[in-house]
Image 1 (cartoon, protein in one colour):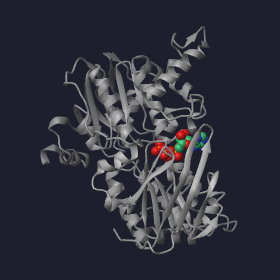
Image 2 (cartoon, helix red, strand yellow):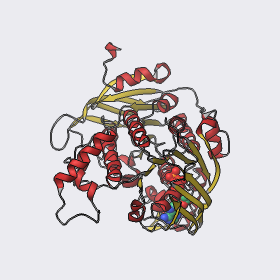
Image 3 (cartoon, rainbow, N blue to C red):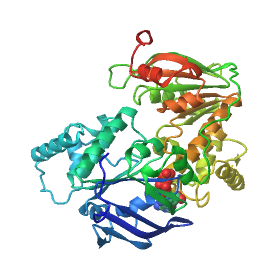
Image 4 (cartoon, rainbow, N blue to C red):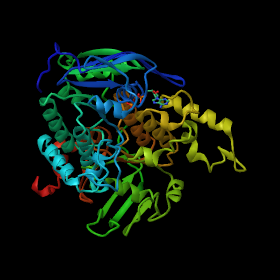
Amino acid sequence: MSEFNTDETPVVRMVNITKHFPGVLANDQVSLTLHKGEVLALLGENGAGKSTLMNMLVGLYRPDSGEIYVKENLVEINSPQDSMALGIGMIHQEFMLVGNMSVAENIILGMKDLPFIPPMAEIKAKITELSKRYGLQVYPDKIIQDLSVGEQQRVEILKLLYRGADILILDEPTAVLTPGESRDLNEILKKMLAEGKSAIFITHKMDEVMEFSHTVQVLRRGKCVSTCPTKSIKRVQDLANMMVGRDILFSLDRGPYKPGDVMVEAKNVVVLPVGGGKPVLDHVSFSIRGGEIFGIAGVAGNGQQQLTEAITGLLRVNEGSIYLNGKDMTNKTPLQVIKSGVSHIPADRGRMGVVGDMSVGDNLSMKKYRTDELSSHSVIKRNWVRKFADHLIEVFTIKTPNQDTSVKFLSGGNIQKTILAREIDSCGGILIAVYPSRGLDVGATEAVRQNIIKQRDKGNAVLLVSEELEELLMVADRIAVMFEGRIMDIVNAADATTEELGMLMAGVDRRDI
Ligand SMILES: Nc1ncnc2c1ncn2[C@@H]1O[C@H](COP(=O)(O)OP(=O)(O)OP(=O)(O)O)[C@@H](O)[C@H]1O
């Protein structure tokens, strides 16, 4: 990666920034400096204050105190428009695109200096020119909802480049990308740096930090605890230690593999897409026993999510059957599936995992609404909810001012921990976990994996969908690889290698390996 010049005037300087929210000191006298051509990795545990700091740079929040200098001019940034005018743009964890509009329409949406009827031909030509220059393949006429997540992210980047951003902030940009898409993103960023642009990226992936940043800055509980050149870091463990303030084990305790009775069985399951076309699940068959973690590997978009939705009653099965705890549960309602003992950690935590406007306490206890523990003659026992929620907040180390805070005000990682706590606590024998460690810091990831293994050691059946092969090899007992809606093969995790799984994920037949 090209070097940058520290003698040049910094492009951004944030000085002694402090920001409070009710009950939280999110940033405490934090300073940050970014130079032209520099990539700064901003690290820290979930809730450490990374997004808050960046949101102040793009005008979504105002600091309580402290100063921001852009190219050494003291600035006040009151809105994303202000930050864009200074050349600063951010790509958030949740994309901000309008699904039923085209790429070109999204790129110009909200721009003030356009004529009443925008010159679309000219705009599309400029988009095509930019996408060629930076290797960002997208077609201006495509509709956003037809694009993959990786393509949507490219549209977000193009939106910023189109508006002239030269300082890019990326909030966990690779969390939702496949390994191939992540590599493409790195290439795109390299091209931008070569043109003198700068970037700050927030990530929990340590190898990305080592490979792709010049500088590392670590926040812990709202304070900056370290800023150093990436080159000076000898081991990935040292980075994890800086973030968490203790050693991360990177190894897990697990009991012996003692599979019990079959608890989940899929027999020749076929799901057809709504508008017709190739099946999204194509004669999928497998079984999971109690005391077993069954991993599903595959590049995102090969049917993994549809499989979990078919099991949990969220998607209609066209052919075949699904048995849970020995009972035929094909096309039963989600409530019937929950009642049969299934817990579900969904892929889309914001849309399907929590109710943002409800409190942390209510989100934690919502699966108990129909139980006698929580309600008596349809009246919710509030004292019970308080005790129950406080207990889960403590056990799962959810960072929240208190249980009455709306879930939408928690950091991304702590929203994920809220879902995990509710689903693991209520697990009645079968746990379906889809990308459970996505967006979690190293400490929390370790805890999630250990928790999943604990479920298995208790005799529960676990279906674990993950895009990280290391995670599957570390946690699962058996691994199925999905490609284009089919199961390519099922292997024992103890004998599998990343190379073999990678080949199967790319659709290579076992006989050709
Ligand atoms: N709008 C808000 N209202 C109240 N509290 C907030 C708000 N935004 C953030 N916080 C709180 O500020 C703290 C820092 O959150 P922030 O999102 O900056 O963390 P983060 O380091 O980005 O975490 P993650 O890695 O989980 O995304 C958290 O305790 C969070 O609950």
